[in-house]
Length: 168
Image (cartoon, rainbow, N blue to C red):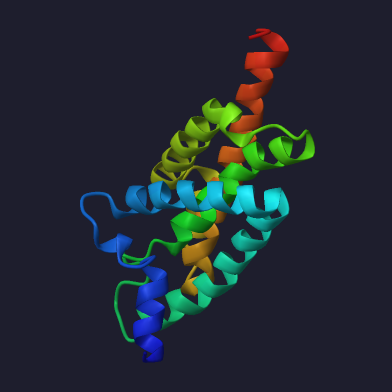
């Protein structure tokens, strides 16, 4: 397989990025079973490692996919959504791993992580918008990772409100 074909295969997450409408949402949805499998196999540490690998490989794939193209952030490139969704799910994976809780018991956190990540990725508030305006492959990846961090913070805040304040 030629290097450019490999970059497109990886960057589109095996072709998921070609699904319409809303390829970013499809990429985020695809990340959910991947994150579940990673957590089941190696807990939070494996999910965190996979996130870093997605970011590093994502910069390479984004660079290769956008070389000699006008569009520096093509919609079919969804590995950034996978990295961002993985990051958002850290807020669910870490407590499950640290406290030996079955990750499926934290299903509201999965939903919150998905919804908040998509919201921040589409809306691009503050630092997400700043990162989105950065040039090059790093900017392509960075806005989604920052959206994932913001979503993770949102998940923690919602869990605190739900359990700590509301006592649910």
